[in-house]
Length: 203
Figure 1 (cartoon, one colour):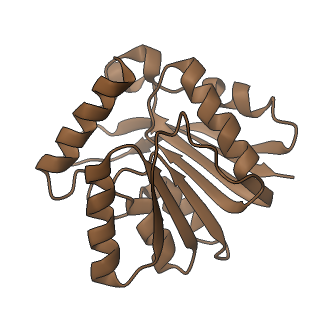
Figure 2: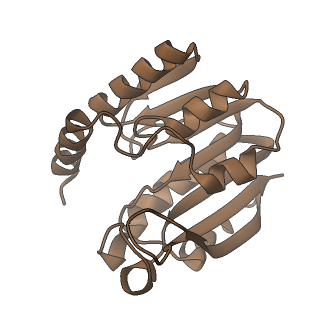
């Protein structure tokens, strides 16, 4: 799908619903980042910013980046309603160049792109990490098509632990701390969804 068409699709989707994903953070993002001391956080392809809002509520200085203006508008409304300070950036993550070595945490959650484009985003995310910072990457695993529930049905844009770590291991400053398939229960079916979760830390 052309990038402009992709953006139009998401603008429409976010414009039609009050909240597409709900406002609770992704459970794996919360599991990894919840115990860490607050610092600067970057949420790439943030959508409505549920992870950025959660981080801000914990005292993080959070920045959310997304190419859908309707999604950012929803996030701003939530931030204002709850008195949370989040920096909202309207940009395509394929073009956005985050400040280097500036963030204590970077989140990429359910960003599904062709492998070459995902590689670009992962490398930019890695460069944005401050020393000691944590990168959390979570997305629908390729096995979710046959064995899980929901998510994209195109295997070319789905994750495997190996696909993500292959790129991250080429970044010398990063150490992959966790790379696995994880299960996430939803209200859509008895069987869980299957995700890839990768956690890396900057040296």
